[in-house]
Amino acid sequence: MTPGTVHLVGAGPGDPELITLRGLRLVREAEVIVHDRLGTEALLEFASAEAELIDAGKAPGRHGMSQEEISDLLVALARSGRRVVRLKGGDPFVFGRGGEEAIVLADAGIPFEVVPGVSSAVAAPAAACIPVTHRGIARTLTIASGHDDPASPAARARWAALAQVPGTLVLLMAMSNLAEIADALIAGGRPADEPAAAVQWGTTDRERRLTATLGTIAGACRDGDIGSPAVVVIGPVVAVGELLASAVNAAVGDDAPDDGRDHAQVPVQQDDVRRRPRA
Ligand SMILES: C[S@@+](CC[C@H](N)C(=O)[O-])C[C@H]1O[C@@H](n2cnc3c(N)ncnc32)[C@H](O)[C@@H]1O
Image (cartoon, rainbow, N blue to C red):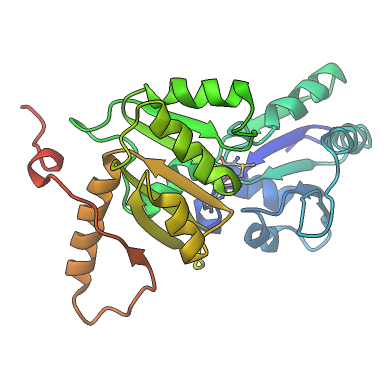
């Protein structure tokens, strides 16, 4: 690890074991770690006792540092000649604003390295047995932010366009706008009875999962008190996930403790999802 360099490290989705080996080594060697809240907490235990830990994240009722303040801090820390890790949840470049920080560092002439991370966009569904692509079922994967105001004309046009893209649609940061987004997707042509799932706190021991349809997912999440942070998956792969989850539950046996998860019924075409790859 070179002093004066900033390492933009992906922490993974929440389970600390899902950081990369390189990411963990850098966390251990860092003299200062500037970290987000989501997905990074458990990893800070691996930091050296002498390391300075700077929390740049937002918490309820408390404003985090602005993006500009974070970037300026990274530049100042690197110029002081310290070994700096910028630890971000998931992958730094998947809705993580890592690109913005990298640009500021580059402009300031600070050497930096990007260490990819396991993104919640695929890891939260996978840990809940939902494959975001599946041969014969979904050959296209779209990952979208649900953060923008769905009532704005630009957002409406975007959801109408996304409704026409076949395959799997994964939404991040969508929980507060989920009802409007689902309505816009249905208005744009996606079937209301298409399977949909929400995975909250995926890969952690707080994980909760709910399966419904595009037409019912927002209400089901509201009733089930499933909010942020969650990943929403829309598409036939959700039915594959149901099948795989039942297989896992059957393998564990009837004596398995109730996982507290709510598994609404979704029609599954078993012939489709079990289609064998061509030789
Ligand atoms: C600002 S984005 C950061 C995404 C991150 N860079 C990544 O690659 O996972 C935050 C959003 O990621 C999703 N998210 C992050 N961790 C999650 C987890 N453990 N389970 C479910 N969703 C998660 C949620 O949609 C949350 O609102």
